[in-house]
Length: 285
Image (cartoon, rainbow, N blue to C red; front, side, top):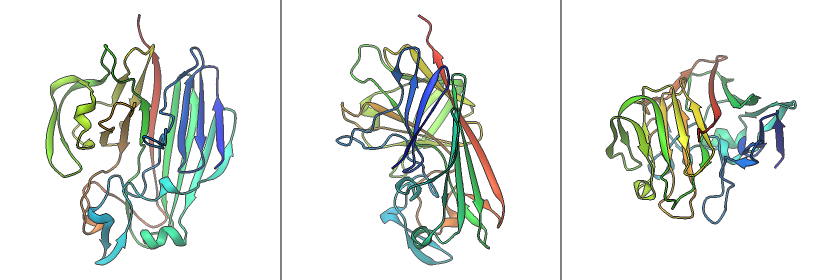
């Protein structure tokens, strides 16, 4: 795997070609790392790219026009090497094209490009999906970034939302849980992730801020182009990360791919683009 480093006067970001994965985001002023460093004994990833699905299927099985296919949770892009197509001091672009291996799992030709660009105290990530085949293509794409979460602190970590929210989230077993009721702050703890992730498309806020305990920096995620937001971690003390995952669709429904809730449809030769931004913010003392 190749690793790219981009930097400006404020931030250093590192991106791996395997899975187009953001592996590091460092605030230069304090030499502070914001990204989980992929401890393989706990969870050995930092920010894998979910494509062409976010979530999974029962038994990893689904159909297209009645024909059965097999695809792992969160798709195959996270386990494939992207080509590096451009690089400068502050930006880079990686791409993945369909091939024989992808077509065995997902019968649609495609081109996915992901660009990373540093602008001041912000990391901007652009996603581009192109249908290079002859049929309408259903897909989902997004980010699966694991931010450092200092657990077992006297001060608790929390998510701050732009607006007051009323959120009912669905779980991996398709059960529902109310996580916010007319509130703009969600306190996080290990126990809430005992049964896995929380996903919803009910959020009204265009941004969400992650406030890790005892940190001098918080991080604001701008996600207005991604209707779904998934929160995930593990119920164990050494899993010191929280995944905040914006996506265009999410879920665990099996059956016909075209009937999966929220999937985007893209016509032949069409290209669709999305952007999310991570803005690093100095906390007030």
